[in-house]
Length: 132
Image 1 (tube, rainbow, N blue to C red):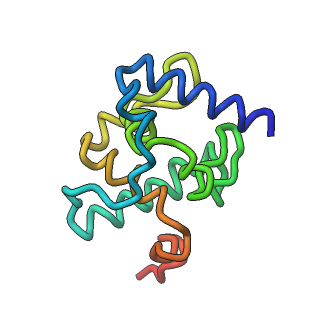
Image 2: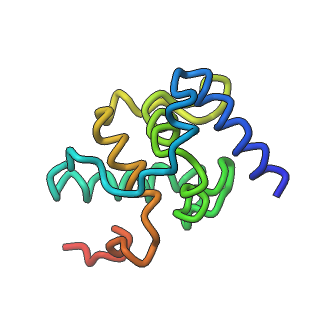
């Protein structure tokens, strides 16, 4: 619990430091998917990235590991813009890398919105899909 509270405080502080400030903090999290949605094939790639790449530090069920929990319930406590900024720019001084060499800002925003969606409304995890 202490780690989660620390993460929440750090996120709020960093979102203000990164220029997301009052606009992101004074608005409730936008849980609708970003206006510019990636193509369905790219959405599947982003979900696979979330499961495998993010899951390697945040736990395969996204309930925490080296990094904090990033499941929907945890992400709904944070502004979508702060989540997208963390994905895109990373967190300097921590193991959280910037993903801007692999995804666009719009894809980071879509992924942040996707992460905030309740689990029941998400497609099955990619690893559960049958492989050819």
